Length: 235
Image (cartoon, rainbow, N blue to C red; front, side, top):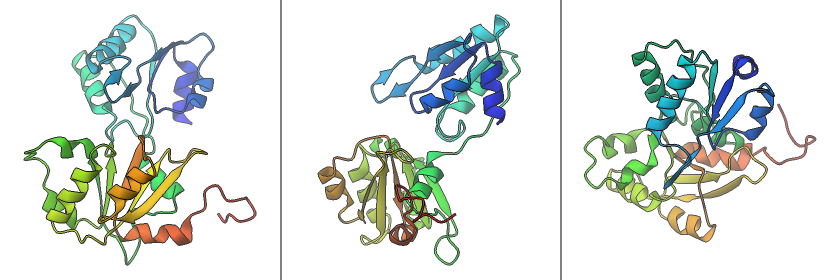
């Protein structure tokens, strides 16, 4: 509701590729709409240009709404943009969202925590596996967490799997890859660390996708509810 209020009030709405386009219907018909979407190797605006744009419009006396998909502080670069505004002496407010790291598994019937099954969850940027000597990525520690959720990890899925197995995660650990989560075209590919790479390739897994690793993935078979008829669904 707070986000909708700000969209209605905004003179300028700067929105991302993964923000649902339906949300723009809340914006004033007189608002300036600016596409700042990003995907791999193709950015509508580089991050520095986005920061400068937010500052320029705000200094011009405009009410600016920065619309992101998911939560702005979970791999959304919201912190970077907020720091740029703070350093420019401009006031701002953060409206929390729901990260796909939790929402996509929920739509697949996978709770990221479950009493007696998983009491901890780690959310990891999957593209960091591409860094050959990533000193900041403690794979053994990550492998010990009950549930692992990787965002932006499709391209590096083989590296992620190899690193986790080398870090001590059993090869038969359940894995689910969820593409286009919460949308009508949601795709779920299930397997284990030993076979998920082959299954993802066979299923033509493509981003955006969320990869969930851990025993909670086994609950998918019982809790899958999305795309069922209302008569089959339970609240």
